[in-house]
Amino acid sequence: MGIITTQKIASFYDRFKDVDITFTKEVIQVIGLISQEVYLKCGGDFWPCIIYSTSFQGAKIIANVKTNLTMKLEETNNSVSLRFCFKSLDGAGPVTFFVASRSIGYAPYEKATDVAIFTLQFTQRPPDDLIGIMGRILEANFNFVERKEDRISISLDSQRKMRILPKDCAVFIEGVPRHCILRDVSFYGAKLIMVGVAKFLVNKDIALRVDFDEPRESFLIRGRFINSETVEGRKDLVALEVQFTENLVPLGYKIRINEYLGLVHLEVSPPVDSNAN
Image (cartoon, rainbow, N blue to C red; front, top):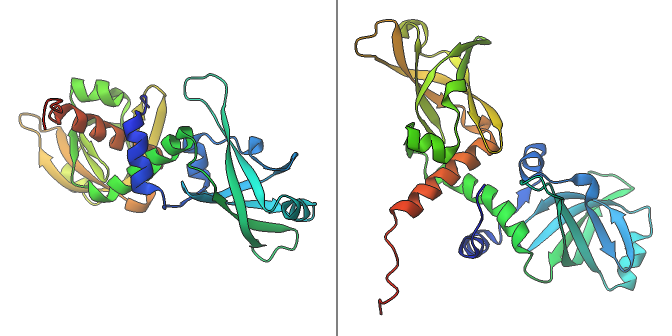
């Protein structure tokens, strides 16, 4: 991920400030949350907690109520700080910060007697680090719906900018990997060329492995061959269109596609005339 500008941070905040993200295992992995370093500060004391969800306005956390946490909340008039901790993408130390909050209520978590889910309301705008980290996911999910028709042709230029490794691309058919060449990719599918006969491949369920660099990531995306074309002058090759299974597209892949589309948008946008009235 490149540097996120102040303008982009402001855009994330304005567009998505009320949208909650549930911290699933996939989300935690993608954002690099260090869960064991997350805790709630109340007064001068600290309580381990689990982040259930967050927006730019507040969060829901899960914590043990068999401690004196609720008593401490009464003493501090429900004033707390939530500590976030993320892995650094550049390999440096972790990114940590507190977000000043107010506890506005809690309830038993899944009928448990010793664990409750607390609703926190942020009392100030969260740090840019949180807005940038969560904004990447929010925008990728939004554009996954809004830009499903956009296709990215695989060229030397797009390979470099996406940091995609097309030579390592493989398609798994009935669990067996087959080498293939990517022609284009999108949020919802891809086109590729491989050795084979169209009539034996179309309508088969497959999994496409797409590899990226900086950082190195490999995504296995499930889908189906839905169409085929001949490859001129090569009877041994077939061009195939893959449609991904929508609810199984990895979040990390969505982010990669979204960030490339955003980069292209910036390159084609006309420059702002500073002398314009």
